[in-house]
Length: 412
Image 1 (cartoon, rainbow, N blue to C red):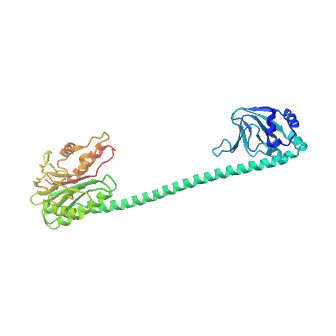
Image 2 (spheres, rainbow, N blue to C red):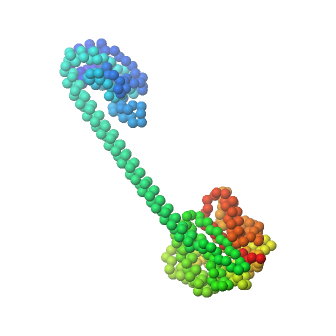
């Protein structure tokens, strides 16, 4: 690029070519490497720069996260005129080399001489400044519009997140209320029966669960014992659990035997329930005078007996169908005698299915092995020790299902 580039610059379009070339010959040329600054915002303005070759970048807040690139100047374009026009003018933007660039440099004295000789340059400069101002305003407006859109989007996201947080807190409060209601369904204190004591523990996998139990007096010599496990977990199973528990308690008060009670409950559930949920249950009646426990099992885990000598056996069992699936069901109905010193253990499958960090389930054999060490303990001690053994085995691994235990201990 030679001095003829000045002939194409609008600022000097009214200067005779011969005079213009002579003027250019008198101007020094400076070279700037990529990223090198010609001047920064706020510096004293005493020079005008005309690009001979390369490219210059004009920016606001250069080198900060808020940097705004106004435009790029190529050969024939100039920067820095505002510092010469304004008395004691300060740079209003920062200029740096985008690539290696060479520029002609016109100082304040030379610029004043040029304006005095060719005043028409001032008119051209005003016209060019107006165009630049319009372009800058347009760029600033576009940038402001984009930032407004980004700010609105961020506000919308924040509002949505806040709404989600409020909804989450509302659901948590409702779940807390549901958990309190569910716990209120379970007995606060287990009954005291001559010759027997009882124990129970329950641990939902979620804030509310589908397991339930109860121990309640039927008459002077008979005590009802029930344990149940609704398929699935969470709020739906908790609602189903409340219905199943209420139905069993209502039918148990009629004085019917265990099998009749569960059949009536199944009849109610299959005719009233509109979902596909079902519940396994074991309901039995303990005669404290004879020590006989007569029960009906509807698809539930068969109970275990801890004998006084520490031997643990699983009560023989036949087929038993869950409640809520079919109108006609088959139940496993049996009677077992509890000798003094023995303990009957009822449990849900969450106990056997609970896994350690390696994914290995606790299993029936571990229940039997732990139970075998608890001969002579009360029903509540049996449940507590089994729960402690389970939590130790689980070792912080996620709980997949609700866990419930009920123990009936015949005192020696």
